[in-house]
Image (tube, rainbow, N blue to C red; front, side, top):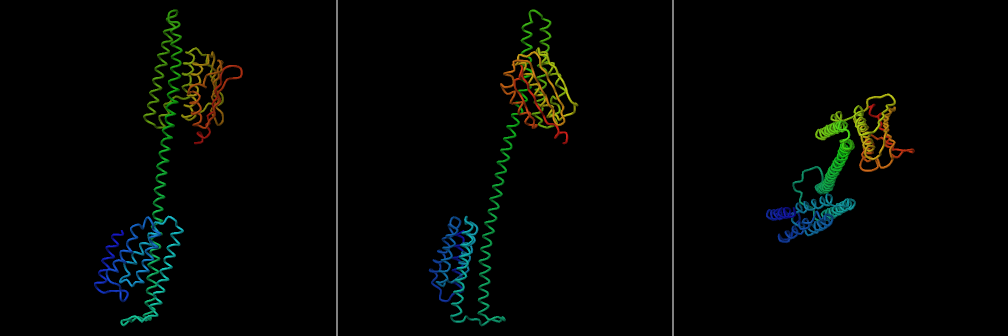
Length: 395
């Protein structure tokens, strides 16, 4: 920019001297005028880095050039305009930017007033072709004032607009970056939540069936020599349990591939609980099941969570509790579905170990429910889950 302005300034200075169109009488020589031109343009090289200093230096050089009766004022005025604009557009301290520009403009009008007074006190200008209704001297003063008011006001306003535009652009870029980072955080959170859900589902499906298959296979091994018929029946149960586990895994993989809420309908629910009880009975447990309240339809998400809680609790009883009897109770309350699983085992080491209890809490937390788990006072272990249903029924 400084180089372009310098080339234009040199050209205009040469043209003005070539045609003799001097603003002031008795101007300095052409080399002196070109030196003033170079001095005015040089600060523009660092105008964006030091906008305030450049404006002050250019203002001082502008007055000095006019005091030295430079041949032309057009290019120096353009350089001064660019310096005032730069201070408004690039100065970081807005208070300093505002008052420094106002100070420079006031100084320029004081210099203009001094020049006008000097012109009025000096010899009258040549107004031979004046034909308007106003006095030529008064018209000349008004013309100079109005032109300079427009000139400096325009330089001030354009600089302010450039600053405001750049600030809005920076704010938009900042908000866009914040939005991008927020989307990345949301995506990372969604991925983590999906991993947790996959881990819960895999744990619930695999752990339950594999535990039951292990106990049944152990029972078949013990009676294989003494009672082959019973061993054959137990092995058939193991085979059926394996097929059930494979079917559930296939269903889970189908949900993961599709990723739609509609696929949740094919997931196990409350109607599939009897199959869990049969598997537990096949593992040697006595299972009693009771439903209290008025049974009603619940959402597929709540039904799946209740199913997984019962599945995990029965798995823990089979693996850890050394229990003989398990009691599963389901209560349909006005605004919640409550599931309670209790056993008569050792009452320790059941859901506390591994990921079972963690998975239960995560499933219940998704629906805003509550979970109680711990040893019973007399014997055994108790798991009680409450899953809210009122909001879903209203929806």
